[in-house]
Length: 467
Image 1 (tube, rainbow, N blue to C red):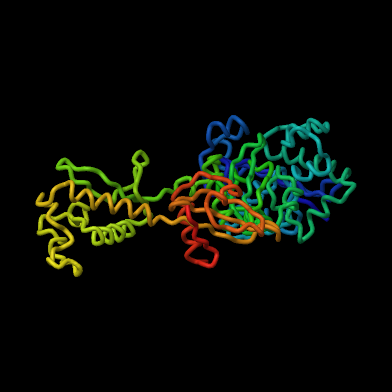
Image 2 (image 1 turned 60 degrees about the vertical axis):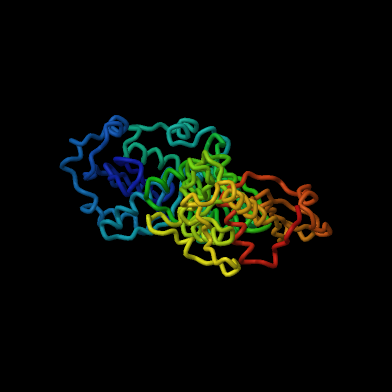
């Protein structure tokens, strides 16, 4: 069995926007070196000054060197039938795979990571970076941060790991079904194996234990593994993998509860790798205010976090539809509700109400100050009161974490109160009794929308409640 020990130097942290400045490949059978390949490469990209100072490779040094496409054929022949070995293998492999693809080749090798192998075969070291790890076991590195020097040290390290692999970790990692070669270099494989196949929320932690990503899952084991099955060469993916040191999780009885808990936890921890749910906010809201003539006015506006809304909407059309319905029901002027904003005759004064024997429209002249503000405002307040009364209180009941319990999500007066688990024998009737089993959570429009959508889709799970 032949191994290709690889080290590359680059212009930056990810392949899609960077180039390779130097590569070294050393072929070994596990005991002795068979062949070696080492060369500087013209990366096309300018080498940043901080990279120059780290590696010693300058733009002048690579100016007249070959481009990667010019060595791709020779390099592909060298790597193609070998086991690809590197320190943090997914970085080197993804970088080369990207540049091979740009040159018209598809690299597809089995991989071994000396960081992951080091953690399994020689556990207990404080750091498994190449410099610290080699220093701890007595391997010297000549020309640190140059491809040849680092590759030479990695060969010695790999030979040392082979000699000390008493439990067959290397062969296990090379098995077809093994997912180890796809895992982040610092993440223990046993944490993946311990994940249940249940709904829940999972947390990725960095080296200091800080939560850097929160995700939800219908199946925790499958979802977490899916993060590591495609090793994209982009900066975001590579930094993401590099910073994952551990995983924790919370199981939930249902996928909906996992959705809700994920949102709550993102707002709580504000992880740097989560983006979409950080930004989500309901876009529009219904507000009331008094104008300078003393008339209460209802208006749909973009949501303002400093003003408490009467109701919120994700789409502007939702708000307009509700406001039209209310204006008809309570004889509210479309102009004072901003449903009509031109200077023509009020549409509400044209619309005759079928239940009005006098034949008046839904607007009784408030827009022309023919109706006193007190009378108009009385109907607006009745409208607001009715809107609040119509906000539902209900529970969504589903399977629990065990056969002896049931899960419950509580909505109170249109707002998400919380969720929890209660014994099967407990009857669900009043809100106050139910709250003894419910954990309160902060609520927002996103969570509220999830619960409402689920209640519409699964009406048999919904139980109306009395406050």
